[in-house]
Amino acid sequence: MKVSNVMVKNPIMVDPDTPCSKIAQIMKENKIGSLIIEENGKPIAIVTERDLVHRLIAEEKDPTKCTVAEVCSKPVVAVSIHADVDMAVDIMNDYKIRRIVVVDDKDNVVGILTTDDLGRKLREMSEELAIKYVTMARRT
Image (tube, rainbow, N blue to C red; front, top):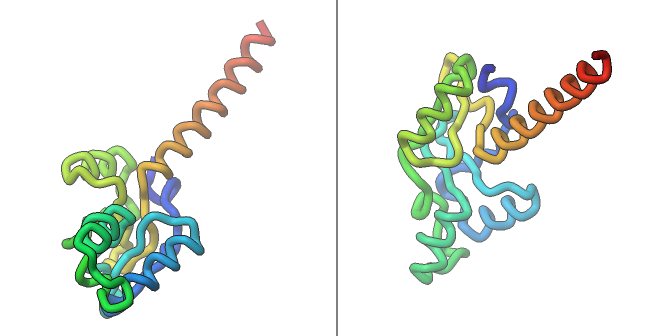
């Protein structure tokens, strides 16, 4: 299965100068746990809820004065839209990350793949298999 079948398309991106207070609002409004930081149309970093807790709140920084560039995780880890999910999962395991940016052939961001997305897809596939099994079992 390809990454493109599981990823969330067109993730929200912000520039490095965005205030952390705005980042938190965007995450809350969109019910998401991360944003991609872009510069000149290319992904340069990612900011997660964990980044905000560890690098903003725990360090008692002022969210209205702190920019996302000060708290984000760099460098961004990305995978091609043509990659298999297995490959993306291996990369995520290697880097011990829960999100990976998906890029096209020109390194433009086209999606994001998270462990939550993978879990939803696995659950969906399990349900489909269960239905097929029940249908098959009723025929015999």
